[in-house]
Image 1 (spheres, rainbow, N blue to C red):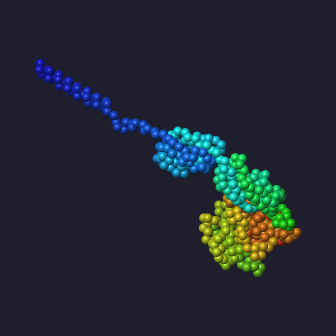
Image 2 (image 1 turned 180 degrees about the vertical axis):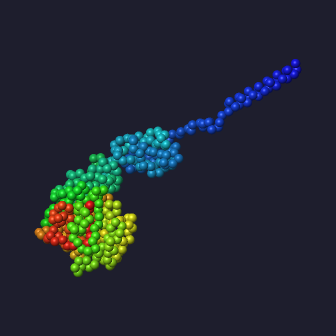
Image 3 (image 1 turned 120 degrees about the vertical axis):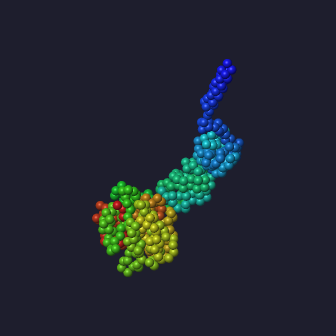
Length: 471
């Protein structure tokens, strides 16, 4: 009996141990399956705005707490617009009130990683009158005018700029500067310019209207579309005094269909023949070359990455201080600021990966929208003769080629007058090319086998060595 009892106790102990082990196994949990408790999201809180009223651009100190662990975590929202954060700390933000509001109270919140704060109110109340301190002193219809002053609106639409009663187009706006396009100005010789903001009108400043440039910019030119993006225009008009001028213009938009190029011949051939050789649709004569007893002043020329003419050394800057660069079908007119008489070497040193095509000439006529101060003591600049010039837009995708005739009842122009023509057409940078008897424009299927102008009053074309063309 005792043996049976001991046996029974052993069995019970075994069962108890098994139950304990089984209980431990079924209740065990893999540590990887245990999720940490969710982190408590602490909302940002605004204590104050200082100041709590002002205008666009007002700098505001926002005090509070929980403004994130970095500037990148934070957004400050005025209504539905984000403000620029100028300075950040966990408890203080400096922001700039965004533009586009006036006479309105807006909710301001701080958002940190999507969690928003309580609301404070900022009231827009811009009563400071705009003040003009200076502006571009001459203008014409369509020209760019820069107005300097104080208390303009940074929101373009809030600034109403008038030239007399005509409203200009505002392109750029800051608190201290407006860039506008002058409206059509008619026959006036000056205009009073004002800026109006939220109905508050500034003082007036007067700008002079350049009558000649205004006439060129608004003239009813005889126009022919050579191909899409290549426009040929011509007219006879009295400009630069009561003098008849005959002007020819090529207005070219560079794109996949219109490619600008430089043509060259080691021996002289006329512009029409050379343009036809390059299968061009239009073009003009380009660089200087030795002619008769003239001084050697060959320009440096590079075409498609290859130097085709090194150019002469010891040449006056008058003939070499600028260059047309063409790279990936974008045109640039560059002024050389280096001193000396060997500027052809400066052009040759320009890397091919910056300019596949280069031709040197001069003088530079317009740099960054400003007409150059040219030496009028030399007849090269002062004489009224036939001229050829080229200008480009700021983005280099629009090119203006101009030829002006002389003789045959019309008078040529000086280099400053050529600069004014190019600027009135829209050129931001421009240069002079070889003029006089060389000045020739080619337009396919127009004029005399493509020659549309009358070089020095006649029909004979002077052979040249280079052209600028579009095809």
